[in-house]
Image (cartoon, rainbow, N blue to C red; front, top):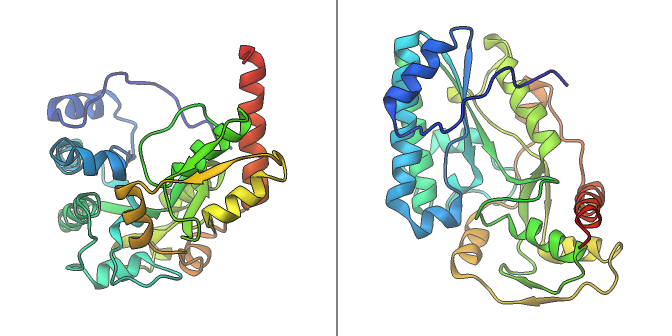
Length: 287
């Protein structure tokens, strides 16, 4: 995979327009901005006003700074949290969101994402090239993560690696779409690099699919590696609400046809890789 990082800016706050302006002036080689700045679902539910400043005001600052610097292309990471209870449960698409712009996502998290899509439409009218990706929950082998709903899976895998019991905060039979980080990067790069003529979806929005599983399926796979893994269920109000609102699966057709992207990592490989990474860290630390 190509080298992605050529320089680093520390302490960047998207709420500060002048910081964004200064960065884009300093790095004049930039042709695409990735806006990944947003609190996760549970974090937004707990502190919606701060989340709004980061998500919506941050997007405004980024787009205005891009306009001044004449940077046209932005890649925005939307979320399955944009879908509410009226959305399809299977094979959800970004197109559905563009065709149902007034549907209620059922959370501040989803409503803030919807507001960002409106800002992207405005940017388009000024000659911009906005592209956005509806992402499922992101899985990875790192040692830390944020406070989102799908992060329950990462918490369970860490508990299993430590041979600790796990308290499951979501319904055991609620399927949720997820994606492993390797697939995520491939999908986002495919969307970033796609020729404009290939992007046939409305507003250049695409679901980037990965895998989908229930908590029960995850725990069954974990027990192939840790047979005595213990689980109890204590539903978290926010996490269980979101798990019921969000779709079971994302469509694979549009990203395959227009971007040439299909996911590679399934549940068995994901579990094996994450457990191995945690065990390696634990062994190195003497835990």
